[in-house]
Amino acid sequence: MNPYVLAILLSSLGIGTTLTFASSHWLLAWMGLEISTLAIIPLMAQQHHPRAVEATTKYFLTQATAAAMILFASTTNAWTTGEWNIQEMSNPTALVLITMALALKIGLAPVHYWLPEVLQGLDLTTGLILSTWQKLAPFALIYQISPMMNPSLVIMLGLASTIIGGWGGLNQTQLRKILAYSSIAHLGWMMIVMQYSPNLAILNLTLYIIMTSAAFLTFKNVASTKLSTLTLTWSKTPMMTTMAMMTLLSLGGLPPLTGFMPKWLILQELTKQNLPLTASIMALAALLSLFFYLRMCYAMTLTIAPNTNTNTSTWRQKSSQTTMTLSITTTLALILLPITPAIMALTT
Image (cartoon, helix red, strand yellow):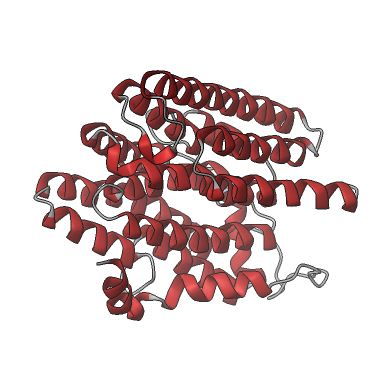
């Protein structure tokens, strides 16, 4: 892609998300979401591969549907209350509609079906943008309307996402689909705590972005998109493979890694709010996700691909990819657990 075109598209992505962040008016927020969607579409379709074009079309249709629902719900609210302010949503029908529209935007269950299919059709770099940056603007809106949302609907969305996100990834062999289901499960954790402690949800989103970035960048570095090709990585880059294994376990929420922190704090918050059953279901659903992360770890570090090569190391060219971002995100994904007391002081 032409570097000037790429610069325009990436700056439009940034401007769209920033516009939604800065807005207190529904029309302005909607405009920011639309700019972000239109900016990422050429990035998704740049390969001209039938799968990429199909993924782009599916993404455009779902995002357009969600945007239309947001516009309809905000207009309904303005019509009945005379208020366009995001934090003044008082019409219950408009609130339910807008919650479901934002759930569709980010891919929460039960409106998640587009996410694994779309992510599977993209290259890893665009997939990374879709899994991280594109979640920020809708989450900013969810954060603002969270005090007014229907608690039963929020808990239903959170529980469904964690269970389906764990269940859906169990039988997958494609890494991008596994990461898509991982994304759905993590979004469920953020959603369930949003009404009780919005700061905890933001913490979870931040750590999710760090850990997912580390996972995507690792797979991009070893040029791997399938579980079977992960078996080749150990003989090529043992150190990076070990770090990737730790990152995946961090995504699964195992102590003493960074990913344990948000799960621990969210379960603690749910117990404080007298929701022990919800907390128990969330903890059990996390085990489903952990299973497919362990499956990936097993493929990466405990299996060696059958081959007839007797050499100890394979011949290959030196990688031209920069690893600075990968090393920073991997380090953060592994060692942030000791700062939990400081985080607890900030979120309470």
